[in-house]
Amino acid sequence: MTDGNEDIITPFILYNLHTTFPELLATNGHGCTVHSCPLHACPVRQHHTAISPKDELLLTQEAQFTNLVDWALVTEDDPTLQGEVQYFCTHHSKASQIAHRIRALKESLQNECLAMYQSSDRLTAANAIACI
Image (tube, rainbow, N blue to C red; front, side):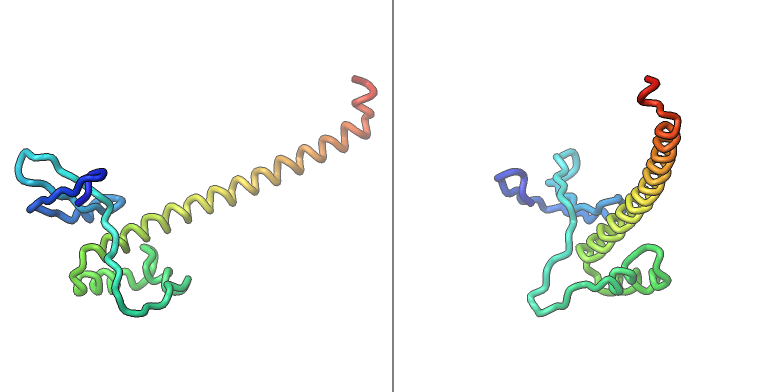
């Protein structure tokens, strides 16, 4: 584990998969400092294809095959892979929430602009600028 520019050797390691963003926790023992870093999947050296949008649907928390994906991750017995899938799911969910908020804000902006333009037309018809 690295702390700044310094490598730290710790005999006790824990994969914390029960947080929003999984992390690797390391310590020298009870009462010692606990060092943490994000938990990401370890790359493999063989050729692999990029994850397609269809594949992404398999990994999302709303997918109908979630139980099968969870079973496959447990069978694979790779905590870094489990952590990375959880990391992906968390960011996918947050991105989806932000997209919904942006869509709602765009609709609100469109409604407000329409009301402003209609008011501008009425002000023009009333010759408001000359009166002011």
